[in-house]
Image 1 (cartoon, rainbow, N blue to C red):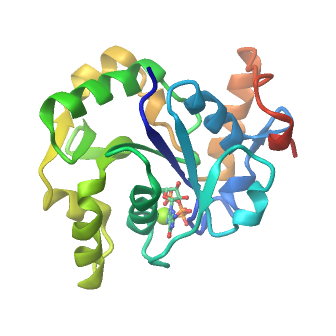
Image 2 (image 1 turned 90 degrees about the vertical axis):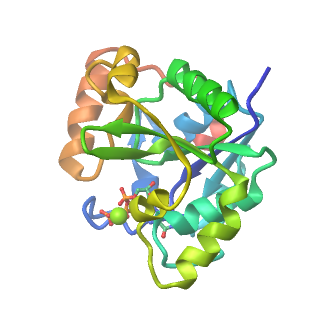
Length: 212
Ligand SMILES: Nc1nc2c(ncn2[C@@H]2O[C@H](COP(=O)(O)OP(=O)(O)OP(=O)(O)O)[C@@H](O)[C@H]2O)c(=O)[nH]1
Ligand SMILES: [Mg+2]
């Protein structure tokens, strides 16, 4: 059985990367498409939130753009939730290259058992807001929060009934925390790419439409 909708957020400014993170590639394929292919083994609907939707013509993904623009990730979560077919929706940032399907399954269990509208993982005093689940019941709360002029996803989550997975539990799935790695700079990306290629990275399953 599949799990409903998954959203890949690809609408940021990529200031630290210096070029649009949607264009990150490995072995002739866009990283984002590789994400989509992997998530499609587990989810019925793959949504990409991008403010340049024309880039995705020919891909099997549902592509939407921010309705509430220039609001940061919360704007992307908002339209992702509005587009999703399922009540609970998985969210990934487009610069998170290490997908862990077993952990996504674990989060899905937590979501269905807890009935909380958000499920995120703790990291010390911090949290991991991507590679996380959010529920469609949050749509109006996000609208109300953004209408006050605030944008912080972290502060928003404080206002929600969030289910937190303890760091120790998440580390059983990813001891070195690589399932939360995000590639913010060119150096981050080059390091990840070299390591992945050295370990025989294989994205042969990617469709032709995801080729650059
Ligand atoms: N749809 C949408 N996604 C966003 C927006 N801002 C950030 N994101 C996404 O949220 C995730 C985390 O954001 P960051 O890692 O800070 O990415 P960024 O904002 O593009 O990068 P910086 O400019 O370096 O902060 C990434 O997947 C971004 O694509 C936005 O305004 N709309
Ligand atoms: Mg940012």
